[in-house]
Image 1 (cartoon, rainbow, N blue to C red):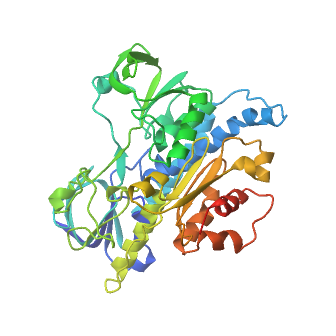
Image 2: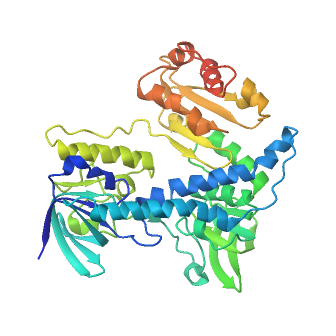
Image 3: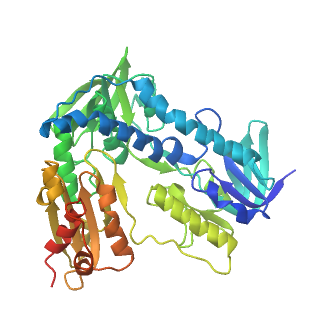
Length: 467
């Protein structure tokens, strides 16, 4: 017999908190396909994304301390890395959290039913869940699609047969550190994992199809990052991976580059070429949901899909594959479910992001290239970390903050920081943009602690050639 619910939430990441105590009189179902040992209850962020990667990044930063100490006259030494201890500390904390979240949803409230299995739409607000006990059909008045995304694997001859390539889902759980890790990709995941494993003593090669790493960042930032990365890693730009083959314990990668054919021998391969929305896994089209060409579910500003009573949030529908965006959209959906006569819209005006590689990067608003393409009048200023007292104290010669503003009004249009603590330093600029504080007022209308890192933001603002 079909089970009918007031609300079905598909996915246990950012969608999971929606059904809080305010839904106590709703009959709710939560569906999650990845449960059990090393499952994915709690979503990408908890299990294979934000949380474990940043725990690895912090470890990597600690391992690199001897490099920084030498410039300050401090003699430090990295004597070794206990990879199992590093890995198990991290997942020894994360796996119990995921398991605890699953147990809570399975036994926490009588009005909530947890289905373990993959949900597939078979009609409007009608789903079949493939559970271990067989398929179950459920229907609902309201459905929230929050099924996220997964690594996108390019179609490269021999890659599947080569066996043993990793994605961000598996690379952090390797049994042992390889001598040489090759990373295919040039974005967030690629550069963060390159930092992590190189800091732990692994030789890194990065294969990028473009002429820059992090090419979607502001050009000044991408160029600086690529320059610094080439000092640390074997960075191969303008390369195409043609095929892969395994030979004993090694992977042989056939590359095509500016100088012709290349053969790269490596121990492990991490494929980090992007992520794809999981709309196909839930057969969103069968549920009547309109899709973008890239597979994202189409939503309006209220997170409503093309089917009444069906909402979507996070990576499955958003062009920003960011946890803070998914959380914001989940709060909007939650409000709209509870208050159908007072619907709210998501605020995507100023979506920031950060890259936790080395150096750190943080960005919000327009890049200079985007401002030019849009024909937007702007002025820009760059302040090096070395131009402030604390940056001078750190012997930092490569980091900077860049700001863009309207020359007439001083309206902040964008901000881009590369260097230590960039994600923290950019937050006051995000706040200023979100609440309409112009560059002049922000720079002059408050005290800036001296000598402290935020002075790099203050001085960048003061350097803007405003009318």
